[in-house]
Length: 233
Image (cartoon, rainbow, N blue to C red; front, top):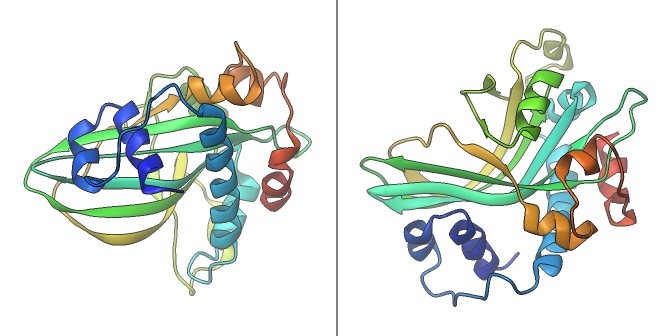
């Protein structure tokens, strides 16, 4: 995924200042151009990242949480950075599991967060959110969802010594597994919003396609997600 793409994602979420700091050398593309190509890139990168994290020895619990999850959101590239005014943003995919254990086609989502305070640096994260119940999923699909406000969220257990049995008592709505690159110091962005990426959903599936139609009503299908759906099983 290109640096230009990362900058475009942040600008589309309203973080022009942050994007300028993270990718100052990147040229600004026209927003209307190539939504389909970028949506396909997000899906391809999400697939690649999940396959990597699934077998990461530092994340032995991830597959067990996914197996118990109602849904997952994969962000292959969340960019955080800034000086004084900071933020975090990126695009990813949401997939929902039905009662038979079958995963839906992916719907595209964006994460946006801003923070104010003494901070400096930049960081890129690969993130998987496991959504553990219908309440959290419904809140996300209402498209006014904020992490930590509309649902409880906890950092997924990470470490080679963590046993699978710890997943038997899942109290939080969402667990976050992430792998970070780079350094970032300062205030933590709180109240991050999850927003449906409507332009990507319509470019990928057709005009009028919504996240609910894709992941719950299952009106749309794509063989481009077959590898990811198989990996989630």
